[in-house]
Amino acid sequence: MDRVKIAFVASGGAARGLAHLGVLRACEELGLLPEIFVGTSAGAIVGAMYGQDIPLDVLLDGYRLPWRRRHQGPRLHLGTFAGAPTRRELFDPGHLLSGLLSIRKFERYLRMHLPFNSFRRLAKPVFVTAVDVDTAERVVFGPGHNEDTPISEAVAASCCVPGLFRPIRIGGRYYVDGEVARTLSADVAVDAGANVVIISNIYRPQRALDEKRSIARRGAGGVLRQSLSILLTEKERRGVELLTRRFPHVTFIDIAPDLGRYSYVNRFAARPLIVRGYSTALRALAAAKERGTFDRLLPPDSLRGLRSVS
Image (cartoon, rainbow, N blue to C red; front, top):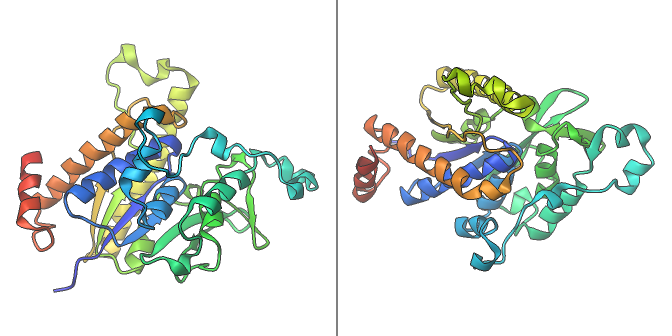
């Protein structure tokens, strides 16, 4: 019997991507320790940090109230991303007008705070996806895929939301957010040897069945958020269906927490976002247990814990 090899594949979602930390907390409590990490945008940030064995509590600590913090770890906020134009951009008017902000400030922050900035030095494989804006192709950074690119640059490219950030230049090519091509890249995890893929997707659309509380009455922001969630979730669903047929030996566990009306930029909603990711993950993993997915993986104590959640 082949050894179970777990991959964690995470979508983007800006501040809502904090729910990924809740999913990882549930995985830790149940003894499901991923060996492969694949991420896009916010998911790339989580994968690059957690995949380097930065403890989950250290990552969570960055979003606690200042007087409750216990660790000196990364603390991401809007100011981390809002960078002024670089010298190169100032002398390239066309590129300067391709987005509101430069993402180089965020790249420098990662360069300073990541334990390692080389894919080659990581004990566990981490993969980051972006899109080459000129060829319209998905590009994978990581072992066997553009692995000479520094992790900080790869993650910055994956987070480069079109219009908001100017495409980032790496080695003579320009890149934007990986979700432009695919919401998730679970196929990369399978190619890396995973036979259990835990997918954390934060783009679950809301269901508002009450006409008086219709999403259409919540302003342009609410309609845009719902439309984006529908679009990206549909892309993700079709992708997982295709991969399930293509790789029948692989188990895909799709975790999509309902994050309600929380904004993509509201990092102060960290606690409810993380809790929702955690609780949804527990339910999804319990359902997987009922199907016998973990019978040959989890110790009896973990299985008993799952039964209490069922």
